[in-house]
Length: 380
Image 1 (spheres, rainbow, N blue to C red):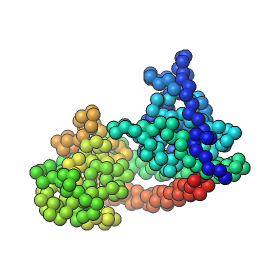
Image 2: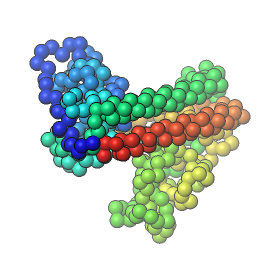
Image 3: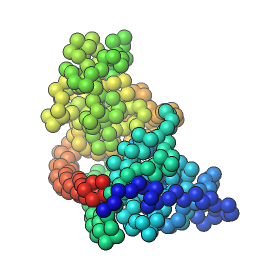
Image 4: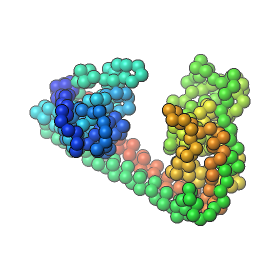
């Protein structure tokens, strides 16, 4: 085992495509998936200004906004964005199959973020990145580690595909029970959203919280749009306000069973306020609305699936730079209203599938933790 820097075992490839780019796959930052070690997306035959070349087996590292954790192995020769650093292994010093796991790990990304320069769009240079230190075992140990880590990655992808299949299963069941919600071939009753829900927006008044009104802990969780994702609530970074500030606000306070929907930025993220939510008192900011008083005709899980999978809000958005869904538009959105007992049966099916997905997610998390532990213990 020897301690080396990344630049001792790998180099930056600095080749450019000087001739025709016809036939070469094109890779931009948008094609690199955070946390994925293999490249799965690219463009072909698309007009572009890229000229940086990469070779099969090279690692494409997203040097802009390194906190996004984008780095993947190239499965072919191609051309990429200048915001991607192309890294090639020195085969005499390191097993090329092991290098991707050294680069695609949290410790290196943290190092890269610390060395990035620029405020709006920070970038890290290879001259800094190459100084990242690792513990490098001998070649026999490297081969052993690479075999284990790639086996873990293969199993991880299998779990991801199974999760995708469960999502497809639920969508198929929805279509089977209710038909396409856009064309409504089964002729279900349709009502505008404003007739189905009472819509409560966030307070925009003079007492709306400002920066100094927020705390890490407090009486009332004050949610921003980042706290509601495509998969539901995300409470890893929640701000709080005091009880006095909560009393000053007029609108946007949660009641149990409210459905919250984001209406600005990433529009259509949705979640249900249930007993599993860890905060008794919550409010929304002005980029969200609460949907209330629906229980007599709508099952919330049916409606949430309708929003997540069929993107029923999209035709009613306004604005291009920052899409938003005005309440006046939202009220007009047609909602398919099947029989409530049928909605309830579908919700029961979703809950059963979610139990299976929970087990898959747990297994996936355990795999990822094992991978990180092996890298940390053996590569520093």
